[in-house]
Length: 560
Image (cartoon, rainbow, N blue to C red; front, side):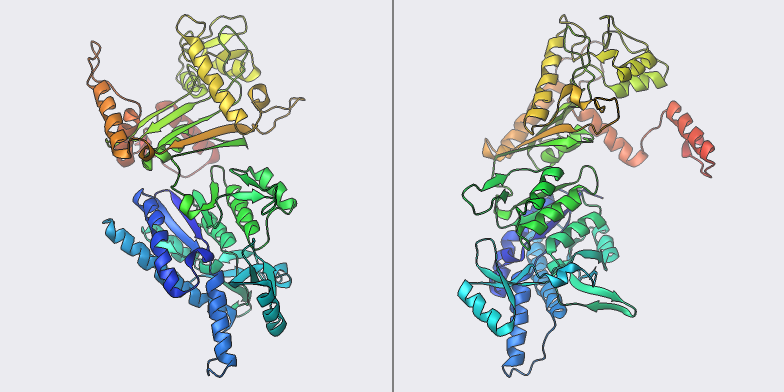
């Protein structure tokens, strides 16, 4: 299974007529297929505000003006939009796939979404549907039809209908089966057809579920890695359309919740987008949500962001590798709980602070350097301890400035703060320890200062009274697009040439070959994706002990 991305398209971005929509979706299909071409599993949700309003008004006009057509309920109007928007999208996506020689299917699932009949949204309509009107036009229609209208983000007045919170996607198993089979799926169109559960089954209700909230639920249900909400503005703003309007390049969950409390985001417009993004991002560590303008998604040569108050970073090379897969340069780093002492010091002040670069090449794998700025990581010392080995001298310094080698004692001393890891280069200045110290400090500064987060001792995981607290780590991410310089092909050819030149240089006596960063990991992946990951004897013993302690009826393959 590849990385999964749910893309939520706005209904307003699809045009106001079938003819306009058919043309616009051709452009929409290109960035979607870009993601597919990079190996992502893409699931698409879309809005239907203008479309469902158009169909509802047309059917109502015909029914009331002698057209001999029946009145069409809102749920049925929503189902119609799922059909015709899905038809246009899947046709445009399939054409783009065929143009690139990609053999992949695309299908639309007519989707019902369960809502709560007692949802307060039914008493407070907020979801805009239909066309934009002047205030005078809106007032006239409201007087004639009894509709409710609101001003929508400075673009005019639109009718609003109830927008209950989505609870369950009825066809989610079908969606999962299609995605697992490699199909690009278009689902929860218009937020899904709103239905309530009754004693005899499901019943449609007159409402429009917000497509961003439904897409957020969809993303959580299919275990997506990222939710992308495409909208009509470059960035989320506070004080929108006011003299002191401020763009927000990023938000923490806490900041988003505070802005929501302040009423910074308009109901039925930006508010559900932010709430949907928050709901998805907080559902699992590592999940991210992006709210952006479709046309801006690939328009810039560089981009960057920073995160504060995080509790987990994961594998640094995974994040930078995402950029390399897209043909771009990825740079990332994070601070961590204090472990490294500054050169000529003995107190653990900074984390192991990895600094990572991934660069695309013209070879089968990128150049990827993912390493801590300490000379050794805790995980390596834990390995030495499990295997009964000493840690090499020069990697860990005691409070008296002497090197420590007893791996078990080192792990205990690191916890109570009576030992510290040396930076790259080792203890002292003789072998260049000040260089690793400098790089560790760079990562500490960027991780904390870019996002205004805590640093060094504040990341110990303890409060002033010694109680456990969140780590509140900081991360930074930068992406550079080579196309804006000498072009991607030239960059990849040059980077690949440098790697080949390094590997073909004169070897030391007894050495079999020279590697470049990321090569060993690629070769290991090639081997282990088919054969599995080897488990060492010590780990095997620990796993068996856990199994026996829990009385689990399981036989491990390595016991044969």
